[in-house]
Amino acid sequence: AVPVALVAGLSRAAHFGVLIKGAGPLETMARIRTLILDKTGTLTDGRPQIVAIDSHDGMSEDEILRLAAALDQASKHPVAQAVVAAAKARGFVLPVPSDVAEIPGEGVLGHVDGQKVVIGGDGFVSSRVGGRAGDHPAMTAGAVLVAVAVDGRMVGHLVMSDPLREGAGAMLDGLRREGIARILLATGDRADVAERVTDGLGLDGLRAGLTPDQKVLLVLTERKRGPVMMVGDGVNDAPALAAADVGVAMGARGAAASAEAADVVLLVDRIDRLGPGIEIARASRRIAV
Ligand code: ADP
Ligand code: MG
Image (tube, rainbow, N blue to C red):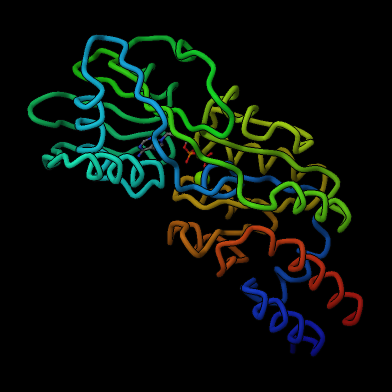
């Protein structure tokens, strides 16, 4: 049987909107030393707004957005949903894409109006049109960069703002006080973008341009140092959440696959519940042993 103190801990955490899936994860949570955070939708708000559309090849901004949004209708990625919403807000009627393939966390390929469209991270799209990633100039703080290619040419970039969640800095300070010794960021986005967004947070490390598999590798490497907690929101984070000692999913707006793979689900859309969650785990364990 599970000690009463642990049951009480699970229940207290649930009141905070932290759903812990059993006594095992609760106990492990009390021992976490390293925290790995996903960027988009986890550390950031994850409801990006388009702030600029940069055309590289003479295509109009409206046409870049229309083709990108038509294809992104096929994706549930938070960036994709924002692209579709922006196009609809401009009154575009979006054609239904065909031959669609999504590579989770990287981007989407398909056909729109007989043209081959690729949308996604800079590295992903560049690699498919034989271009170089990183050609796009530096941008403002708190941004997400989405590349768009049509018929084998890089036609433009959507520059989107995606600010940090409220209280992100205070939360990280609190976690350090709870004994988390090492805090890393893991993102599928570009390094320069991630650096700007997280500037001033005092992270212990930043790994960018990661595929879902590379996020898993990072978790496994970090586990050699001690118990690792990984927090993520996307379908692309699910394997890394499963590979961590404790996987935490952003449950309120995150992908169902991430909530299934996780040991802990944040039922409220607030990452700052992590600190209280860990505090409760520590307190329950002290009482139980
Ligand atoms: P993170 O790891 O920070 O949560 P993701 O790995 O989910 O970010 O996404 C990384 C980048 O890939 C995004 O910033 C975006 O440029 C791009 N991306 C991924 N999927 C899509 C999509 N469906 N539509 C547009 N861009 C996408
Ligand atoms: Mg994410």
